[in-house]
Image (tube, rainbow, N blue to C red; front, side):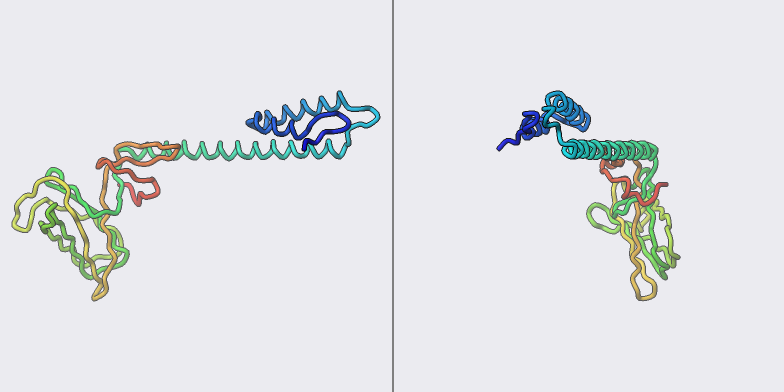
Length: 221
């Protein structure tokens, strides 16, 4: 049932429905409110003027809507600025090498390297490299190591000194401290070739075609 003001003859319920459908932001709503208020003041019955409490309530409601719209716009502006800053930062990483966890190493020009991350000291550690067929082509004995990162190089030769073809090889690390296993990890340096932006979110495109988020980068070299 429609609610009609006896003093002005205006159907507030119908007006509110129409306003909600047409108004897309706080400015539209505020303009409609002012027009309504002006119409009410012009057409009100002098013997039965508009209730001051009702007018105050309506003004408070429109102020709340305007305030919420302003807050939403401020939050959106902050979000847009943050996205722009992240995109700019991401472009500065192009051409750099990101260290990412993995079990592959790329042999190129007869040379390859990987980084081993030791969370604690190890009394012995061995890096094992296998070809695509799963055959061990090289074992690199690292011996005792302290906690930290160690760059390991491979000349691409197997145990017999035969040069292996360039390509992708699997790599793993086994480390112990006495009889206790050490959770060492292999970190691969992969070149960042470009930046992709999807719906305002930046991701790094690696030279191997894979993508990663900026938060997954443990280190740049």
